[in-house]
Length: 162
Image (cartoon, rainbow, N blue to C red; front, side, top):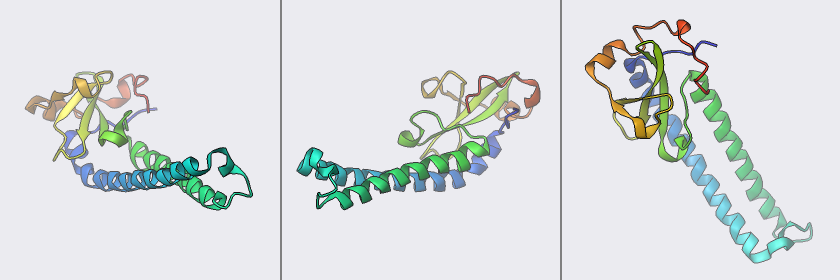
C-alpha cells in the first residue's frame, strides 16, 4: 500500500476540518466522562447489587453504560473514517493532547509532519520513531522539499503503522 505524502501546504489546508473533527471528539469524550461519573455513583451506592435485574437503578445503569459504549464506538469510527482514511496518523495520546501526524517524504524516507491542536499551522516534523519529543522546526528547505521531491511509491512504507 502506498501512502500519501502530504506537502506542508496540504497539511495546513486540512487543519480547519481537523479542528472541527477534534472538537466533536472532545465533546464525545466529555459526554463519556459525564456518563462514567453517573456509573461510578451508582456503583458506589449499590456495589454488586447494581447488576441484579430487581435493582431499581438497573435501567439507569444500563442506559449510562450503553451510552458510554455507543460514544466510544462513535469516537473509534470517527477516527477511522475521518482521520485515518484521509491518510493522517492519530498517534497514541492523540485524543488527549490533540496530536495529529501527516506522513511526508524527505530525503528519500518517510517522516511525519506534526501538529498539535492550538497551533496555527504545521510548524514541526519528526522521524517516524521520534514522536513528540523528537519534533524539529520546519525550515524553508523543508517547505520546498517535503512531500515534493520524492516519489512516495518508491519509498519503503512498511514502517508507517496506520
